[in-house]
Length: 399
Image: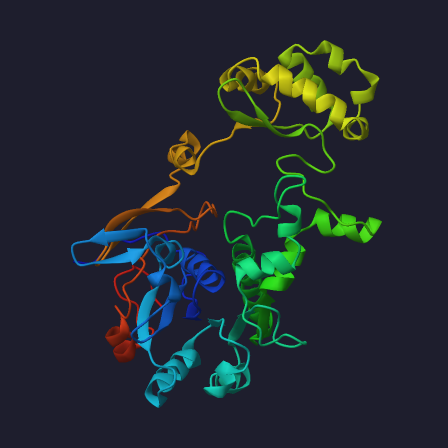
């Protein structure tokens, strides 16, 4: 029985050939798939995407299992298991590339060229192809061949130097944030290239690197270093240039206060009954509060420790002061904001059964993103792709 029609995403009809593994590349191609593109994921025969083995935890069903890591960035794709070292496998990919709009790859620089699947060769057969390479440190320069791993790039690009408690050890961010930024940057670059192609009719080579994305992602931190010539330091849960903008311990649990301007500071003082702090000339402006941080923060910490977090949060919310409870991941997944905004998509896999997955954060009123396909089993669509190529089956859109 045909599936009911689904809203057509804004990228309906766009064909994406995905030759990526792990996180940055698959996040990019999943986002394109969420937006309606038809995505074929080319995986290594026998092994597949590295993250298929990155467990536990697993989603387990009556006919198989998949790692949670793999599931988080591989919905809305078909999987074809292909040996790129084999002439027949390369011929399949080359044939798909002739009809593709976008190709995304994250092999070491030079590998795709060695297989006859580099940009120059494929663009000669498909001038409209947008060919995106995701690299660790770029495709040229002194370290073009160095593999890119989020942890190593966080260390090298300065992220770990500014993360952690003051005087404590450097720390990585709790999620592979450089991979996430790089995947989002790749998506943005591809969308820009698609927009330009609509005018020119020509594709182009696109590249994003983890190292470039990491440095750009430091935003105000790198700019401060460029402006002052000084090394940024670790501030833990405080902020280098805004006060109070940090976590505090209430009588029962932690919460955060994010006072972004002087009007909010005055409202905070009124909310918590601290007229003396509001009227203190040292704290009237943010530069003054930064200068006198060591005098102000202990007073606030003592005050906040005297009552439960709910009391302080209620008072501050009533006065429009930015604040939030410091929640666990489990609490965040039960947050009413997530539930009321349909922030979870149920996904039924062929082998692993039904699991929930975080919905796309992109909200488009007329052409919303959607879940068209569950994350596939390794090679689930190999025969289909080899036989029919880009023919789209059972997703309600035309390829």
